[in-house]
Image (cartoon, rainbow, N blue to C red; front, top):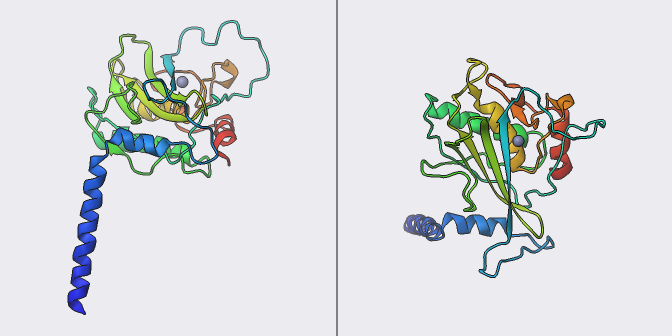
Length: 257
Ligand SMILES: [Zn+2]
């Protein structure tokens, strides 16, 4: 009796080890692609002649607040203070990778906790499980590269007015997001804006950018300057850390209450 119990344990250990080994054989990108595959009854994804998914890339460039913000030429009308992109994730939760390499004296654990809390801010505003509770840390992960890996990382942008960029890739047909990347510009000094008003607040910007990652658009109407998806930010600003009713309304219009 005891012997068979032991061999059962050995067998399940062997099986577990094999499962780990087998999962290592599948590249991460392929796994992400497999995971993103349209579930039954949802629109099919087109492929290019080369056999790749036919994807559209959208870049959201987040600028430091100019002297006179606001989109030029816009006609005045009562603002709803949110916009959605008409594309969203069809397979949830979304897994992501953080590269905590930064030139600033930003403690790694603080940075990782901040990113995770920002993801949770959106997650908590819908019944859907938007983001994985856990994420991977990868010091080689690059943002802005289409590889089916959702990466949050720092990178050096030549334009000193660009705070960060969120890129999303969605399928031309079916319009489902299959990847997002967030790049934070190392031209800025990053940190906790509630402690030091001279730094760019990580939570403030990452929460805004994560809004794009799930299908939220920028808002440039000055009457909506308090919402998380308002298109400009500045050093020391922290109010984008929390969502306003329009941000939540936009999110729930896509993923439900
Ligand atoms: Zn934006």
